[in-house]
Length: 169
Ligand code: NI
Image (cartoon, rainbow, N blue to C red):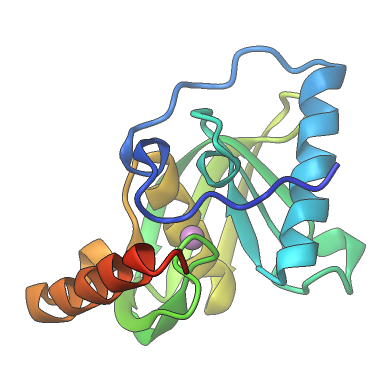
């Protein structure tokens, strides 16, 4: 099933999530649905909050469906190590049309559980490191615009308010 993507303004996006406790068939199905929804939306990551669920669960695929080995389920993920930094433009499916430069670590190691509940660790660099940070932020109720300057953030919020008035958000 393809889920619609929750847009900025929904409270679920700015609320810290609850841990995943049951690793059953329903969770496996939810993960597959999240991958499908992410591919349709052409994203490289999707957090459960972006389909309206307050669960500590995200999916990432920086190959955008081209490499099956790049499909990662991040259940209850934590960042355990970071190194260096990178500043690149970042966007979010919940803030369509908006982008901004965000400083992130160049290398990020996460510890997470897969859809079966097995614990794994993975080190990512570049876009993958960025995706880990962006998705784990989502699970903590943080959106990328919170990493921008107050000026840039306020500008975005004003533009979104206007879009909402005209029914375009
Ligand atoms: Ni996002």
